[in-house]
Length: 233
Image (cartoon, rainbow, N blue to C red; front, side, top):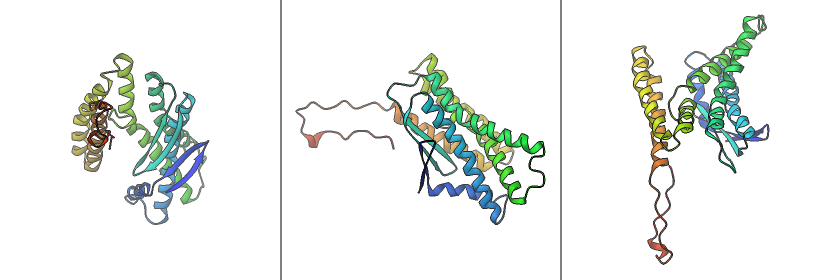
């Protein structure tokens, strides 16, 4: 695993992040796949840093960024609870950062900044714009655990904190019921599978969060009879 700090925030890159290269192999060959992977790395890292820096701005600590699989995750905690409004902004900041960066590079390209650039630069620019914009927009789809799903949960939490996780799950599965058939009809079967996998992951997260907590046994119960603590898996 590769580790390095960025703006004082620890960043880890798991070996599974190289799976992103498989997507590049559908459109590129040879060294262009490596360029695609590098561009995807930069755009996804920007996305996660959008989360991380906004979280730090709102008082979060112990912030960590991890890139793996086909994306990444930012984790943090705080001394005081972060409001739903600020949490909504943290969730939205990742895609916003990527979309702004991708849009800026696209605008530069349309104004001739990259005219005459080498083939390799062209591949990097096109790959960066594509991953920054597409990854950013897709992450706003209201499916937990995507950013859009968490944004729905935080919005619902402003009205009813207790029912917010359930509301976000309802919105998630309504979205799945709409998106999956559309993806299949248009020939994007792989995308449909990914959407379902994400939704099932979010359902697992929801079930672990809402699982009833076991009460601690009385002090006089022998240690060997005490139930082990529950940990989300």
